[in-house]
Length: 91
Ligand SMILES: [Zn+2]
Image (cartoon, rainbow, N blue to C red; front, side, top):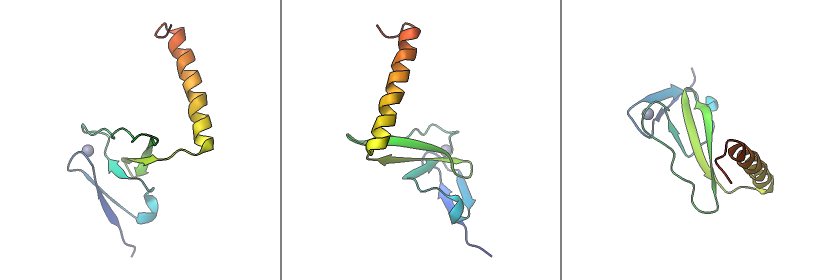
């Protein structure tokens, strides 16, 4: 018999019970069906959300981006801005 952990949604009363090895380490977990939205990351950090971090729950964590992540964010901004420009949302 293996032990299980029960996680609470950060925004409502829902819980998720599962084996610890099925849980991806995050700051907090939320069900995705209530009003909870992850808070903005503090200055200098980025927020990442993992779908299915713990069964049906999502998880978020705030982390300091490394060089690789900063480069990926830079590429994503270029794509976003190109898309916004295309639909006329950016001048
Ligand atoms: Zn919830």
